[in-house]
Image 1: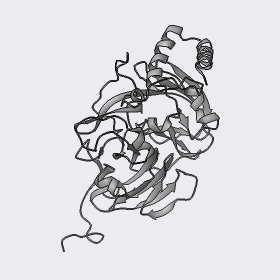
Image 2 (image 1 turned 30 degrees about the vertical axis):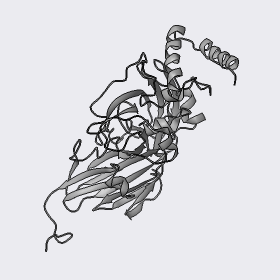
Image 3 (image 1 turned 120 degrees about the vertical axis):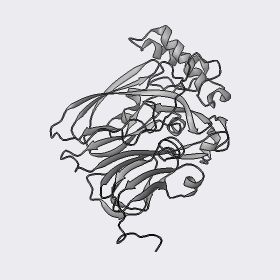
Image 4 (image 1 turned 180 degrees about the vertical axis):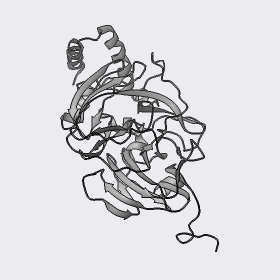
Length: 375
């Protein structure tokens, strides 16, 4: 497409942009031009030099927008909606905000994340089969890039990606019915979707079956993704995103909930349960490239629903379950003995060197008939 054709397409989008000031749209489009983003509803790449596109924030230096710095992006695994007890359908009005933030991957290592709701993975959404969702995607005005949302739980073009695509300062709303049950990923799906997902733009929507789910003592929510940076893992300072490393599929970090060992006593704290309690874990792999080999060291998945297919019969006593990029898993656990349970990707170099570790501490009396140490 030559420059004249590009200008025609841009003018067409500006003219069609009802309810939004032309001046403001041009300002935001200018920022997206610098960031290598895409016009909403088109496949027209904004012109940008490669160096500007590969900065950590996605914006050239001197951008009019300021990406805020936060202390934490790791989602709290306990912060999820509760079980649905009703047996009738309802309509939900949900707003999902795209937020670009600077935070630490590990102590002293800063990175510009792209997130939903300021956390990785994005907020867990919970609905019932047959419910209707009125979903508003809001791209905050101080962001630097175009964003959208693709839901694997949606029948519709792009899973809603086209309907929700917008530049900074805009919002778009779509409506869908949750017609099939299970745990499904949602993620950003702009043309450079791998960059956006790697930077944190993914989450999980649970569509409970119409009959609901049984009670458990705890429910936890985790997500895994890779981060590709231009410095060695652990090197202090601000890391920029490395597109070539992503293309070569050589990540510096493989993380659970956005940060190196985020849910451990070394960082934000391990989870706590009591002996003989039960837990259900919802797990999503953002990727964009690496399959998680999800395993609980010192335990097994008492029940496992691969691909989040909750209406299927569960597998029993599964040691390690592959969860590929763009998919989910639902797992249940028993805790018959005390001690730490380490949740890992069993491609163990990702644990030893790249950060893929979370911990559940089990409190209670020893049970030597099941496990006894130091005999």
